[in-house]
Amino acid sequence: MLQSIIKIAISALIIVIVNELAKSKHMLLATICLSLPLTSLLALTWLYVDTGDTQKVAGLASGTFWMVVPSLVFFIILPLMLKAKFHFSISMIVSGLVTAGCYVMTHKLLSMFKD
Image (cartoon, rainbow, N blue to C red; front, side, top):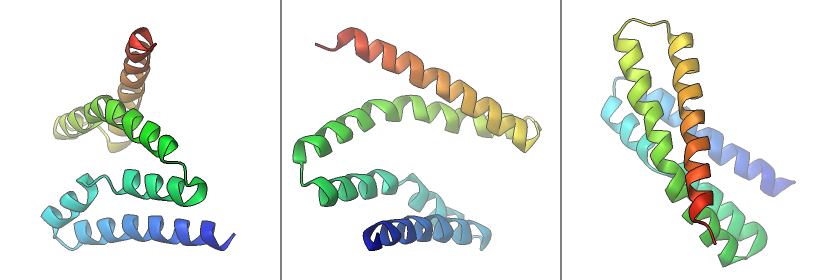
């Protein structure tokens, strides 16, 4: 239980730090922190700490690599919509839905080449 609380605290701290940096006009530092694969690093570390299984870590890292490509679509569509003056909520929903569609397509493509 304590380990779960520590995981949550560290993960939440990173989110708060990025948010505070962005609010205090340290946008470059905030974007660098946000662009780092901190979530991936934490998840891979927690998986290894919990299981000690390097093959599971390798599998998760490999899968993450392939899913980064469709996730980039979100960061293309969202700023374009916001610059076009779409409402924030609409921009987030559309960006999320299109990204979800890209995840599905990527998964299907990867499944075709598996085995």
